[in-house]
Amino acid sequence: MTTLAPVHCKQLKTWTMIQASAVAVSVTGTLVETTLATIALPAVTLGPNGRFRLWHLWSFNNNANNKIFRVKFGASMIYQVGRSTQQSEQAFTIIRNRNNQAIQIGPPLVYDGIGTGGAAAIAYAIDTSLAQNITLTALLANVGDTVTLESYSLEVLYGA
Amino acid sequence: MPTLALAPIHNHLARSEYVMAYGSVGLPLTGTTAETALARVSLTPAQMGPNGVLTITAAWSYTNNANAKTPRVRFGAAGITPPAGGLITGQARTTQLFEQFINLIRNRNNLAKQVANSPTSIGMAVGVFAPVSLFTIDTSAACDLIFTGQLANAADTITLEGYEVELFYGT
Image 1 (cartoon, rainbow over the protein chains, first blue to last red):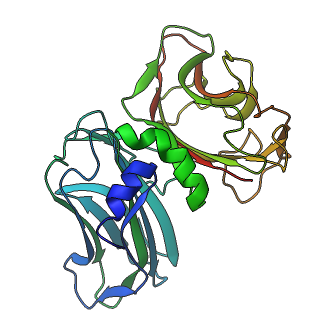
Image 2 (image 1 turned 180 degrees about the vertical axis):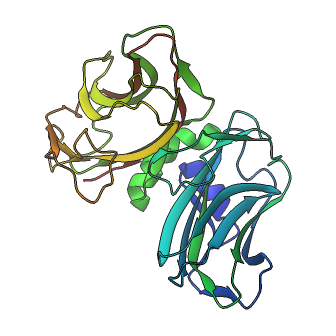
């Protein structure tokens, strides 16, 4: 991706791929929440009506222990699920600026992107006029388990 | 952004999808049981092309109770008002609080023939007990896509929290 891509995508009204990876990153052997990926969102990348769409694919071992994976935007949690006897999960998370660079609306935390959710939409107040990080983390309940972030991609749509 | 008027031409050349409309201010409906348009996206004549595709993403919130709240997406001639227009999706919700769906409308090698998911689906599902939808909407003329809400009880609220409409021109 060239550094000019966001400018062109803004003019073309297309989603811009900010960062993507399919290199597996795992955590095991610790009960400390561990960051598996960090995506830097530059200041004013979204615009007052912009949004981002984060796709994330996870795998984990199948047993009775809880394995938690999370996505954080700045200091706010925007996605969190705990799984045990499943083996993989893919989700996409859309956060939309609400006519203000510092006001957002997002889905419930436990929500994979499609269908009905068991909780309400969540309002955020993250200042996207400043640079922010999006982090993907995992937390184990048993050090013998493994959570792997298999891939992710962050797309941004600038909204004036 | 003054360059946006050129976007469709560039996207044709680049064979890329472009976001022709979006919104996220939050558009609530309450106080009526009539199906009501909350947002409208207009297509110019032949903007899709004979094999074009519209991809529609929408997020909704609902009052959580036993009453039906129905989000719909309709596609039809310019100026349509509900209940006119082909029904792209529309399933009543009751005790849910939030929903997001993605629907695709594809021209079928003809500006006036479309295929889409069943309106009983949210666009993606393992199995749907209903056939796909076939439409004969003439996209050689101007068309509108509308997002509507309808309440069974006027005291409830349905909110279009956000949406994106992406267009791929298909020759």
